[in-house]
Length: 297
Image (cartoon, rainbow, N blue to C red; front, side, top):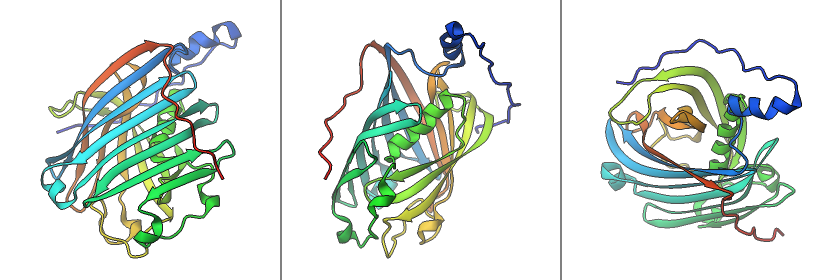
């Protein structure tokens, strides 16, 4: 059993005002990776539903000065794989600035219930999003997503990176991120629930202090007019998706805060995601791959 105990609030790190020591103070406070160093993290996760392992996922996160890339590969397995066959490969790349992340391109391909599905999102400098989706929304009886709702949005992976990098600046995870995944437009609402202790578990390589973030889902547009029962839902409506509790912390005592544990509910029972392996590679002057975006109409 994993025990989580609330920790007392820690006083903020105060930086001297002198410009000459500002950079040193930022490094001590863990505000951002060193500019000349690319940090690449490979993270393995195992998903348990109702106490049974049903899915393995691998995430690769690369951070450099002003750049990021994140890739996730996952597939259902076991009894859930037979009931809900699903696999996916996703990649997001973009830039990091004072206002957070700015995605450049997001691609996703996978198979759902035996049917191939693909998404490509290209982001223009004015916040417009060019979308290529297969199958198209009209074949799935979906509500259309107006263009004005997709402007300045982020793809799901970039939305999580945005939250993680906010933690580097000491902002916790109190924020709302507008998400457009190519089919649905929704808000991910992160609520900071403070620092807690994640106890040791034979399923996880992480234990220690972590920030607990509650993630809620607010649907806005692009949903099926006659929604089907998804495995995470309690009922048939799109409003029934339960909140997710996510714990983030630096792994190995260094680097950005990373997802180390996740808990939520589903129609098949409790869902727990464990971090089973974490590997870090430092490579000098390396940047994430930046594909050329398609021209926007």
